[in-house]
Image (cartoon, rainbow, N blue to C red; front, side):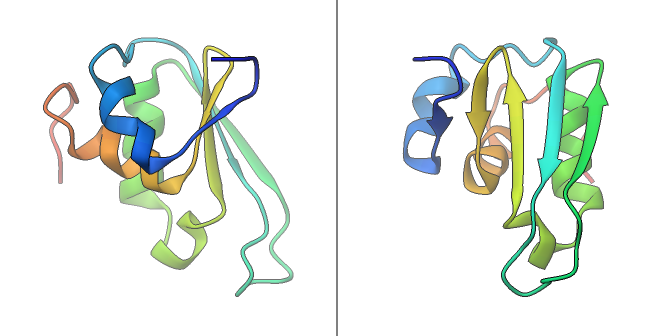
Length: 95
């Protein structure tokens, strides 16, 4: 995959099999269409597993649509983040 290429939900199952949940990650929340005044926000995480948990468990569903996670120069949209969270390889306890 090229630098900065986005991974959509359709590609997430293939990526999940080789995904490194221990890699550092960043989550960007861009403006959602429903929330025009929401600024772009950014958070860094020690592990992708923590970033995924934050995105799914802490971000309100309407705002999650605008979330993007970057891990090892790959970007994951909100659907791919959900697939990684729901996948068998996800190492943290789900709530």
